[in-house]
Length: 84
Image 1: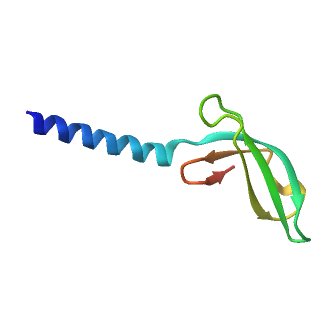
Image 2: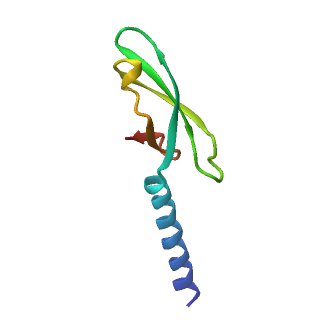
C-alpha cells in the first residue's frame, strides 16, 4: 500500500511540474520600446499579475519599428517564451 501511495505522489508531483512549465502564461503590458537600428526594436514589458511574479520586467527583440511592439502579451516565466 505504501508503494502505491509513493507512486501516486511522484506521478502527480511530476504532472504538476509539467503543467507549471507549459501552462502558466501571465499577462504583461508594454512599458516602452527602444529602436536598436533601422531593422530591429527592443520591446519592454512588465507583468500585471498579483502573486510571486508581480511587476517582473522583461524584454525581447523583434524585427520592425517601435510601433510593431504588441500592447500586451502573455509571458511564461518558467520557459521565457512570449505570445500575443
